[in-house]
Image (cartoon, rainbow, N blue to C red; front, side):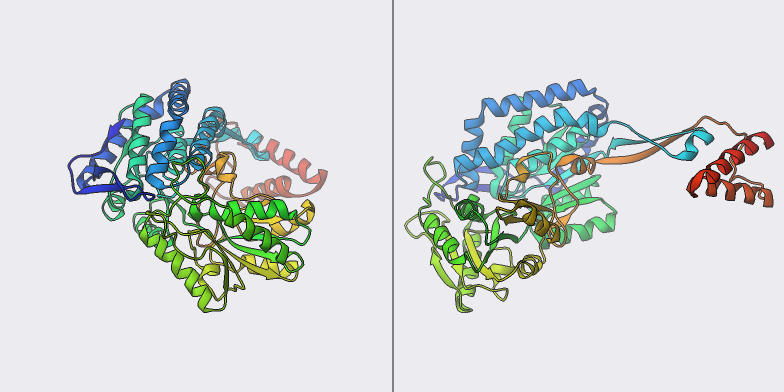
Length: 522
């Protein structure tokens, strides 16, 4: 395990968002240090890629054992650095990483296995064709602060399982978790240079990672930064994966189980204080059940216990910093100015020292309000009513984001029909916001939610070069499409085209006849 710090260029001050206490000061890396880290990763990559799978599996097993053994410590560090509750540190941070380890150990050999391709002409021409999946080289990973453990760890694990090495930039707001990740790989005795942690600001470290020429960049964060990175990647023709957020709709049908739906809405809106790209950011409730649904949601929201996530009885912790509190406050104020009503919360939790905002339920909202169109990334639940399914689908799709969505109904077939009409990367029925925890499920979405996928075989292969390998065992002296050309050659090619792609027995007989004549006349 390599700590990629060549020299200090300032310090990152880690602050507990619940108490505002300084946890630690961490040296930031320089641009030169980033370049050195990429070079170290490139030197290590050839040896790592050639390691047999049993060696990699043993390493992954050690990583799993370290996390399981130190789970209390890992959860405590995440909670202190990010603010989320310790329950959430386990179920939304540690669990997904353990599941990704299981996925990589069990499925990676199958995903990376050479695939045989088939075609009617391959047998005649003596061709054997396959697809092989090779590592790209060095992967740059830029992680967010809202899930500082599970997002980078799951991406790192996929990247190194595919034979790559990694240069990883933790979010500056959760640099202590970045150090934690580094220590886990060190304890697991991962080979030197395979994973390199580069602490610092996005402007220094993120840009330096790209300038150093990594072979792919995976970024999770805001739309403006994602667009800026994509522009730089385009100039370098660097492949890039972007996961940029969501404004995820929650559609409650008139036949929904309101007890479950209201509980799901409250958890989905306020887990991690709403700082989740898949958070329930806008609710659409059918007019027939809206009043009862809202009543149940408000009652459950008011029962939430807000405080320091280190307290096991806390249901919702703080926001990450003051700027996030101000953004949530601005969205609530904008809604109220435009006619919305706040039924629960709506203000800062002044009795608490840290960056706290009360869990907030807003009604009488519409799509002229920022709380329904812009990513709030905070503990708000705006609820809008609708009259029919077509209206609900229109409203749900009326967004520049398209990461996740959920539909709530006792009629699963009806709900699935609605799901197919929603533009989104992931959609769930009678549940929400959990699929990232299962490595088999692809993650990502269209529109401004990003580009590409992580997780699943689809996301795994984004960390590989897909190479087509074709081997010919010659059965002809020369291929039919080689020189010299002639009318006879033209007729032969027509016969082959008809035989392969035409219909009926006659076409197949023509193919067989043409093949025999080709062999005999060469």
